Length: 302
Image 1 (cartoon, one colour):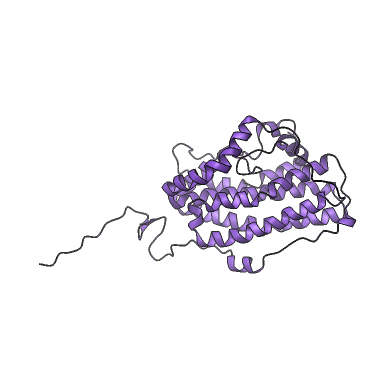
Image 2: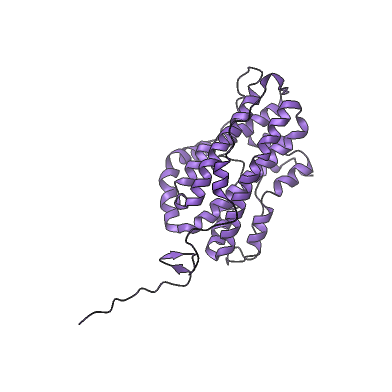
């Protein structure tokens, strides 16, 4: 006698064994951003006329050096992302490959400004704390082992958190470079303007991806909130603080307009999260924006 094969029933929200997908919809999330066009149109090196660069020394030079150290960490940022569940997302990995390439040349442009006079790159001011050393050790040794394990347990919802963080991070980078423009002239100003402008498409991609996932399911909205806890800071290399961070942030975001632009980097996503009270713990209130550390906020209030 023929046996009737039993069919497993998945809880609501599962489709073909995967969570957050629905009948009739593709398994890969698509937004209006054209990833293929972005990869085809990737931009290379920003040519710098070093002979025309007039970059004053002192605090402005240290501020640019601080941003150079952050921008030149593109490989660390990329590795940390691709070592997790998010590395399974085809559209994201295709975008990230070009994003890392473009970040490389943005960092090179800042380096060319800093070395235009033939001098060495500035060393970071301040000293590395014990906590920062431990954090750096974890990033180098522990993160490649731990991240794949816990994100595989969390599943694809973790991607919402990664996209939210990167959207805010790129917005914060752009705000920082724009804040330096009034203090720059000539070739240096042109290069920094180009660095800020090239971030437009990066910000747009990460914001669209984050918003689509946050709006798609409660699990992804909760994961985005978890990634945006007040302890997280976007102007850091995978959470590791630069020794010069407190001074640099006070100097870069010295005016109310500069700080307002920085705050705007996370306004849209946090508003979207506040409109989705998906967690009993968080309630309907979004976390307090944590773009600046307590030390960095001290002394720059308007």
